[in-house]
Length: 466
Image (cartoon, rainbow, N blue to C red; front, side, top):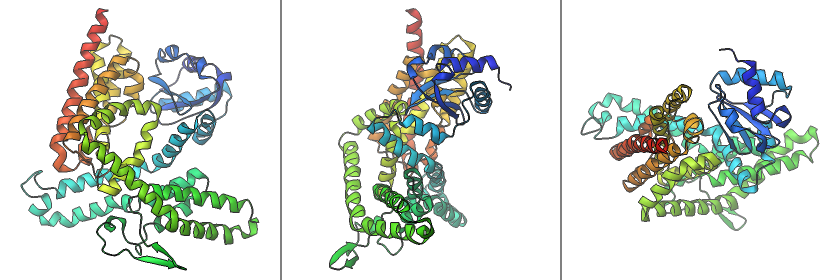
């Protein structure tokens, strides 16, 4: 498919002209701009362009949804026409970060750390789902599949090993990504993370049941030999300390001695600080956070489900949803499952259902087509086309999706639905839910398939009568 130069010119004009573009890049589906003045953007003109499926601003970037494949051609044409030069995603992020307040920068930092490791976590969740299907009783037979067919037991065991690897060595993944974000050596981040889950340490999952906690004696100071399996805060803080020490040393040690001194000193100092102070303090903080979140949902699961289920989609608009990745992983590491992620999967479906309903509300053929394709995308866990291309454009559709998601969140929270991992979103999401919770999850799924559809149709008809 060729790209019309006039269309690209319209996009450039819509974002305020080439003089308003500080930098630009693209991802799989979107053009990403760091603009000098976002008030110059003409969103109405942009979204009337046939190629444009939606636009939004997030984390200091103005993003224009184009579509997979086509966005590459549009970007190349735009570079030729504006002469801005091709920018990396990091350059765009750095440019956009200048406009963020401290809270937005903190959220962006968490997103930059957790998004790169998300594919490994999602893959682990999907594989855990497959293992749960094989080992969970009452799904196909009264007993589990592996009990009915013992020859499948080792097959399931290997799947479980592969699935659990990302969580057993989660600090290693976070350490790699965090050091990369903080400007240190990612390889040292991996070593630091693996050090915190070394087999010589008492496994964190056995900490509560241990009769005696082993300790080191450092010149009269007793330091617990405890690992931090499944913990998020210890490796995050330790990674920042390691990166800070490493950068400080590199600026002061001559190049000829850096290989010999920088990494050993930085890792040694960070290791001692981690086991003596960072680990115990952040472990306690993590447990407090976990207890607080769990406590809210234990005391008032309906309210918790309504709030999180309803607010997740608006949080996506602001980018704040990324902060809950850390909470999900903390819950999984501390309690063995998360009750937040199942609501995310249902929120995806709700947005898809609202977009699907818009096919029956709208008369414009382009928008109807966009509604249908974006609904399919949302049902598979990618909600951006549905949210930004359709539902937010017609607010009643977005509100309908939020209402359905909130109701479903209340239902599955009351039922205690949990997932052993962050998994695949949308309709395939049930694979990442504990099998014993499938019935309640499917009830929630029915709600987000029916309620947003009916409400969107009703609101759409009321809107026509005005």
